[in-house]
Length: 314
Image 1: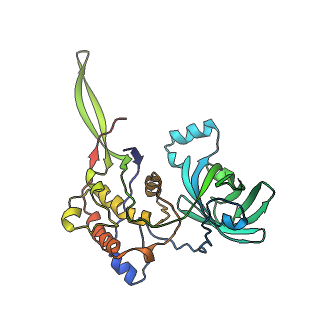
Image 2: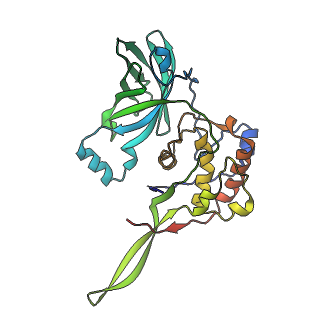
Image 3: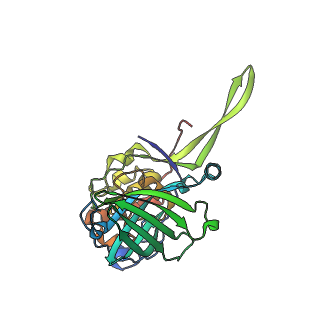
């Protein structure tokens, strides 16, 4: 198992999941949900591109910082590791002639774009402008060779002075989103920004010195025992989970449905899994009956669950 270091910020809820859906209250996963609207893409099932129509659909991959070593070092010193690499979904929703329309999803931000696509004998070239609705919008320039499946390009922010990372590079592969309730959560979730400092005395060269070590907020092994999209959870089981266990177990349901987490901590954690594909801003209509029941149960226990801490080799 890989170790994953992150923050965990748990939001508490006073209404049940069933109530939220029944009364059409905005449904939330990990935070206050902000309604985001975009057109469902006209997905082509072809994973290899030989025509404009083959471009339609979801293109997914790493959205990597393309910056100097000096800037990279500065980001590490500030512990903003999440800025260096994140997953992006570039959704080509519609093509009309040489015009292209769609939306991008990265770090939970959903931005509409429009642009042009043109081709020569060997490749397709795309230039797409996001709508400049926020400081995180920019220009995509990319290309893909014919009879290939890799979309390669760069992104440049419109307001580079406002961002720590203003240029990025990416290689995207086309993926067909399909909900799979069997997708597993098997990574360790560690909050290295939330810890207990424990002190102890030691003797070095005949002198007594005081040392300290840190215990980090994390999940327990019980997290891996159940799948909240398949197994109907019981009060006996949930009452023995830690707060982090419940937090991740609950949000794993939304991750399987392709929910685009805006919460940095959840986004970074679920991006560790190859199966995770952020494509939707609202998945409440897609939840199964067993998932709704489990979310309701988990929310009732989450607020009062005990926090679990452990030590890790640093």
